Length: 180
Image (cartoon, rainbow, N blue to C red; front, side):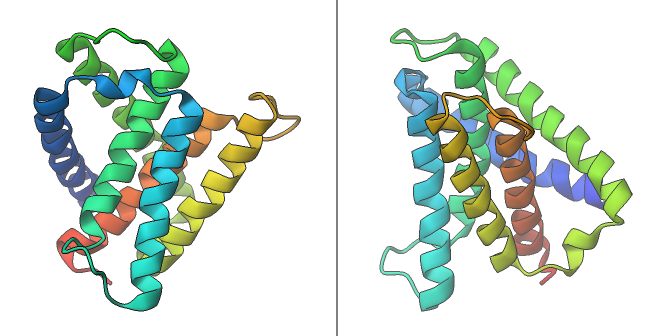
């Protein structure tokens, strides 16, 4: 599990670096998006990954790696949007980065607890399964959004975003460390 924690942290450092650079380029323009729009942004990325996996090629000269990074970052942003709500004004960069890291840390803590219980079963899964699980979580999230955020017995939207972060991190670990 120590190896998993180190690999997880490595992936998050990649995502954080990109998040920080994009925040310098664009500010926090994404704060205007409603949570359902964030869900759709994540869906676009996951669907592109699945399309590339099924076709075996892409016409845009980018592989699936940037899309998994985008899923991780958009999920963290979506959780911020759930908490704060959409806004026209910029959020201070330091506050944004602190919230971003807080949510990624929550995802990591969840992963470590589940990883203990499931005995690192994710390592024996295919990357394409993570894509499918992310797409399933997106369908669930859309259904909960269509139900105005209410559930009868199921976890909420934020739990689905946390799971999507972890599935995307697992895919990134396999991509970064060549563990297919």
